[in-house]
Each structure stands twice: as structure tokens, then as C-alpha cells.
Amino acid sequence: MLSCGDDPLPKPKGYLRLEYPKAVYKKATVPLPFSFEKNELSDPIKFVKSTADIKGIDVNYPSLKATIYLTYKEVKDGNLEKLLRDAQNLTQKHTMKADEIAQGEFVNAEKQVYGMFYEIGGDAASQSQFYVTDSTNHFLSGSLYFYAKPNYDSIYPASEYLKKDIKRIMESVEWKD
Image (cartoon, rainbow, N blue to C red; front, side):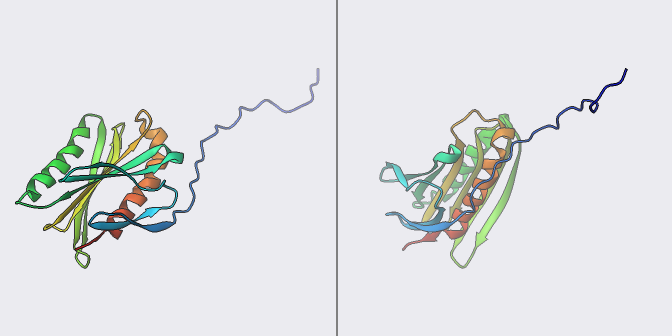
């Protein structure tokens, strides 16, 4: 008996390929004592809370189902140590779900911007957090959250894309006097 045709072969595995647009940054001027550059992919800035001591801004990315939450606090009455400790403790709360937390120091002496960037690996609620300060008057902290169950493998590409935006925010912060 003869047969025509090739031996059956299994289909190759398919992998999800996510491509994001090249980031285009534009200065976001906000009625707060600082400015920064944000990705044009994000929605217009949304103010979410404002008290005498705390100002909140949301930088929303609907297409990525994510938000970078920014919180500004004034440094006064020797509260810098408490602000730093609070920002670091917020990151440490993710250690239960995180596989690792990598930190990177940020220094721009020319603009008087000093801070820390935290990259959180694993199925933690927030994948990136940061803070910047001038050590005398201003303190800005930020956290990245997705509108989805934290599954590191699924959100990794979007997390990597937004990590660059967070670093751009840190690099472009300018304090107003």
C-alpha cells in the first residue's frame, strides 16, 4: 500500500507578541510645585486628591490597563525621614508576593532631584515604585498598578514599557520655587 502526503507534524507553539508605540514625551505642567514629562499614550493628568499636605495625580494608560499614581507632599518640620520611611515601607509590603525587589538609586544633582526606583518581580500588586525629593522642600512618590490580577508573566511586557515612563518621570522632574 502506498500513501501520498507527508508525515503529520505538530504545529509550532505560538507566542504572544505585544508591540507598543514608541514613547513620545511631552512636558506635563501641573498646578503643583513641580513639572515632569509624560508619555502622550497616557490620558490627560487627573487630580484625585488634594489636602493641605497631600496632592494626588493619576497618570492613566487605558490601552495598557494601568495607572501610575503620583503623590506629592511638602517637606517641612523635619518630616523628610518619615516620608522616606513611609515610601520604603510601602514597597516592603509587597515582599509577601514578590519574587524579588531590585532597587536603583537616582541622583540628578544639577536639578536637585534625588531618589530611589524599586522594581518588584513576581505576582505583586505593584510592579514599580519610586520616590524623588530635593531633601529640603519637595517629596514625590509613585506606584504602578494594573487593573488586572497580578500575573507577572502576563503583565511583564506592559510593565517593562511603563518602567521606562516612570524613569522618564524621575529624570524630568523639575521643582518650582
